Length: 204
Ligand SMILES: Cc1cc2nc3c(=O)[nH]c(=O)nc-3n(C[C@H](O)[C@H](O)[C@H](O)COP(=O)(O)O)c2cc1C
Image (cartoon, rainbow, N blue to C red; front, side, top):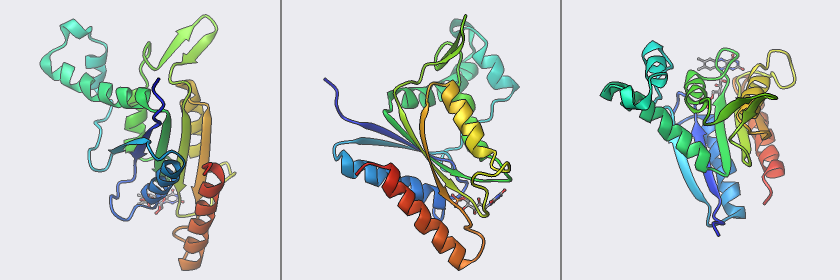
């Protein structure tokens, strides 16, 4: 029986080196690795390898039957297929998510657009939509310059809760690093709080 825990880390900051959300996602994965030393970790860094936007050509490729696609259309669909296969295989998904202009980074949106495929990761039934990416635990490391937790301006959390649940991922823990652009003291406090939250939510 397969018992190895498979962890998928998705980094969505535009920054590769100095990203706080990526560092926090790394920390969550490290903690998970301490609890399950033989865990397999796959990292999808969307700043290193940006995923293409869902444009008209991509939609055309997706809605063309597989045996009728051009080579270019098949290649475009294959890019999405790879992201779907990664998330299907994962037991645990860890998302690193900065706040950009009150929303999620475009790369995270591109990832969500890529993995949301009717008949594959969700389906419509007589009782409404059904998510097919079930049985997964999700951690989301949020990094923000300001303070938005629990306010109407925090559109990220309801959006992510909604779309992840739509896809079947209902067990989601959010970790907030806030006030990161409000001076050194606020930044230190924001990161210390995020580290505490990680210790709390990731069972050691
Ligand atoms: C283009 C851009 C837009 C941003 N928009 C917001 C915002 O709307 N609200 C906020 O609190 N912080 C905002 N910030 C600050 C970032 O959320 C903060 O620097 C965070 O640490 C970035 O994530 P990262 O460290 O993983 O790159 C913005 C930063 C950038 C670069």
